[in-house]
Length: 633
Image 1 (cartoon, rainbow, N blue to C red):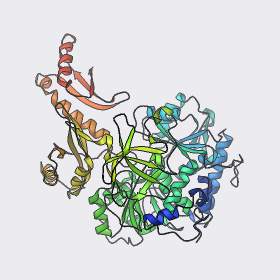
Image 2 (image 1 turned 90 degrees about the vertical axis):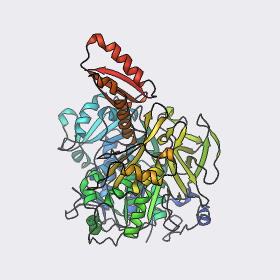
Image 3 (image 1 turned 135 degrees about the vertical axis):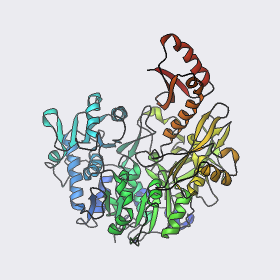
Image 4 (image 1 turned 180 degrees about the vertical axis):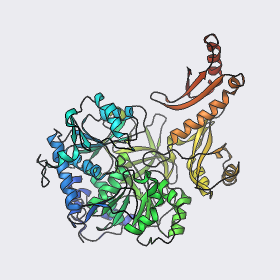
């Protein structure tokens, strides 16, 4: 069949890799001798060579399986990526220059991503961020060319571009996916690209694996943005390893709804699909954020017959609430998810209902996405993130109070997850962010807590910063969340710490109920209390919330829950002021220096009484660690 990206050594047969011994034997051949493409551009061309007339992308405008998709063949896709690279070259982009883009999941977004990597350095940016956050990322990246969606109903991307463009010192050109505005220096993507050759890189560039391919932003949305620097080797390795472990073959479809500013979307799914010669079925410009994508999930699977049902865990959980009816799901071979842990209850429901193996993956932007996976050729252990992909390694380490390496952990001992391999980046663009990023040279500090069992399976036990620290006692939210997920009414669940004047933090739960479901007061608290052996870990309350706050890639956005929990506590603490008729409200949010801050807004207090009121606010909130400020209206 010709695997192409793997052809240099493997040929047409995949190894089983059914044991550690088989993987070690496989790894005796250096990785550099196995991979057939030095760059993402070459990897896509190898995938296209399977069948240039096969579809690379089928685009559905509204995730409706009855719609006729816009189809782009591999011949046309490679030609367009080449034209995009030449367009950026004509705009002055060299191998060390940055093309940033703010685009939904339109076909031109995929062309921009890989065309930018063939010309210089791509920088996909989350268009849902606030303008000041976008400006910080673009400026940190030294953006030379910005590609963005033009004015369009239902999106404010162009309005954000208008707000930030004047703040970008290195910006030389703006390319609009839309009509353009030549009078104001705005190029039209469609007009500019069609004048470029499609059969060669005009620059004559020969892309090296060590060349920088992209900058991906990570690390939250407050403070200075962290930009992860990927080489072409980092990214191609991700596609190569996914093809190898999943035994991918050309000619199948993948339902695609992940954003391209996330490595799971751009690399694990998009690049892997293109390098295999498979087809992305793009579920509207909003992807999985479009409610129709989940609502129509089973009929979409019946229509396009993918082998994998994959996304983030919240997508899998939401899909379980949709009755499959009589849909033909026989094409599915496995379900997979990453980005955050798959609740065991969700994984078990998929296994039981659809008789599919559930392959959990684990990695991070700094490892170019997937670093461990549940191999289909080995026993799948629900709740585990599986085993390292070939040529990658995982260790569990103990760090001292200053974050320095002390020792490796024993089997099943919880510590910090450290990772090494061809996908691991060499460092952040801003060297200031590299402090503490590596536990040892080449070994990234994930910031996650985990353990390795006796067979080498990785179990993520929590995020170090997600720990609830109750009176010096560390409480891991993950097991409590799993118990909450097991309740039949719960669709999404999360546990965070709420401030407490005595214990520092207390655990509090949040749930989004399944559509049409309801619970009695205290029902969820009792459910967790009866199933949690550790009394201190039982949430002091469980709060229904709809919708659950999610990031742009579908993870639960825990900072917002922490802010909500803190706001509830602080508003309660200030009750004595309200009882005296003083109108005061607390809102907690992000702060660039302090992480979070509580803002107390007070209304209707005369000038001569304000000093006394401020003093009382300070007294009431003094026992809490979080900073606070007072404003007047």
